Length: 93
Image (cartoon, rainbow, N blue to C red; front, side):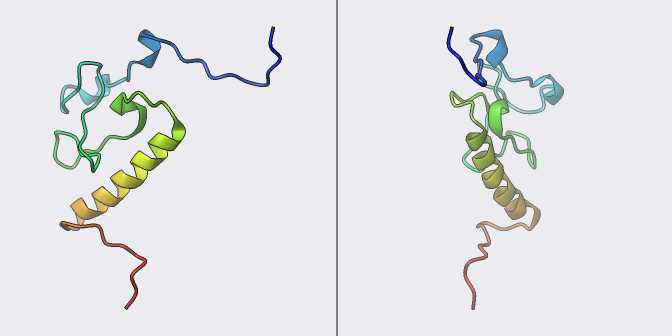
């Protein structure tokens, strides 16, 4: 017995498959059931972005989902404003 205050339980197989049934075949999925995205977190459906565990990456960490979320948010801003590049806020004129 090891005394502990908490534990992360990672299940192999059934517990690690992303829940994508709500996508109803609207976006492309990989062989593991994860939503396929590009570097901007865009899916195969225009205007739809996916982040975190639904992508079914080998890294199941909240920091990965947070990073994905930041990338997606900046990509969505480009999409909504018809920009080709990200508008940064640290360049002041």
